[in-house]
Image 1 (cartoon, rainbow, N blue to C red):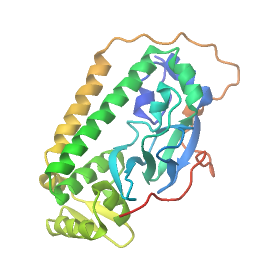
Image 2 (image 1 turned 135 degrees about the vertical axis):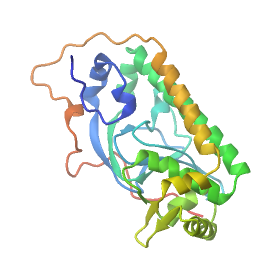
Image 3 (image 1 turned 90 degrees about the vertical axis):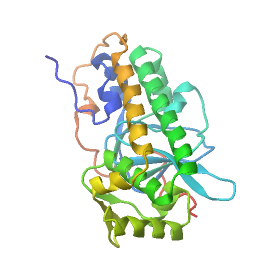
Length: 278
């Protein structure tokens, strides 16, 4: 049996080997630094990121300078994937909220592989549908549910994408997720601490008690999770073709086989400037 490479990103790992081979020579491992801006709203999308660890938040920038998160992705998603549809300016700002690593590829290289792989096209469609589902649920949740219930939902979503029960989230990041001022965040955090759903300290870490947090969260978390799972399951059951095997050059090194990003590698065009807070 052929051994699959340890890709680290679930979207890429689900591809047939021949389709991964179309991307592998052009993928570069990069570090995702906390609070780094991968692309700003209105800027051209110059890179696509497939997280292996960490978390990326999609931020909507409002004319008055306020910002609000509309979705998050971890190693089950990608950022910049809409560039596969053609030259595109980013409709949102993408910010690293939990540090990690990612596989990076230029839109031109990705689009070239996309034209040769129906499996890769199906993957893009699946990701687009899961992001749309997340956007829809977040919009409805923001309109209908209390701040503490929404905070619990976000914390559960983030916990799904990181290791351990300590979430490295600042007051600014929480304010951005909820679309409220920091004073409101402080009040919501206090309520969750009173119910012992979370414990926080001064180093920007939030320790969660998942069962208690699930009891506080609104139903949106579970509804969203089930809906996205159905979308992914439907994709898994859909018969798909795959790219013809491309010949491998002798001595070619497959970057997907390495477990860690090279020391000192940084994302192309990444800055450490944060989006405007509240």
